[in-house]
Length: 270
Image (cartoon, rainbow, N blue to C red; front, top):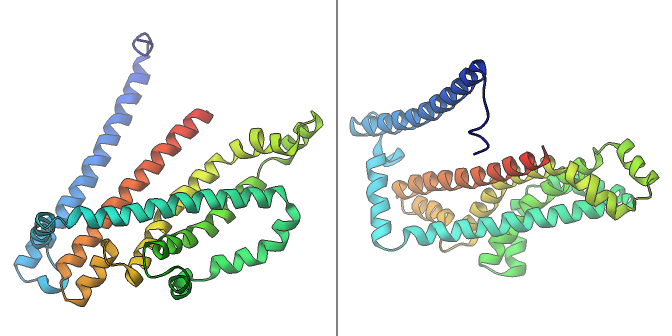
């Protein structure tokens, strides 16, 4: 009702139409790119320009997907990988943010741990995979921990950097009015760092998928990572390509969810 009562100028209405038209054009172009890509792929494979054994083809992947579905395996593998990724993503983000708060609270501890964080960030976490498997066993906990380790260090560094970038003059002003450290964190530092935390979430989406797939490469007996490895071992590239495409779609959906969270929170701030 409120929106209907708003009177836009003609120029404003034209501007809104242009924005809407541009948005629709972008979506249509994106869909066309996908259609052209898969059509060319299918045609090239049928004409033997590309070897279907080496690169598979959309129709073969579709047949394999239907076969997996009929066997009751398709959604089981998707569910396992998505579940592990969400667990690793949520715990990596929460733990990383919590440690960043601790480092902001105790500057001495932050300075002490700074070189260790740099080293851990540069270290390829996959190198720790065998150690983690040895510690927690050959199963799902190892996969989740690998995903968590890959995302948590980046979260700590990103969020802590966001905390340190908050305007010092505003913090001094709050101290002048008698605010304690917890109040400064709650009412100034944390709200000001929401864009940084959202950025960390976006980065963690990709890192969590990487961690889970790497973990499934090492120890899993189900999941999309397992299908990719197993497909490669038995020369079933239809299985490999289908798993990669499902993985891409799932990662994109998760990214869209995080982007919607960003829109909501930044809208709230404005």
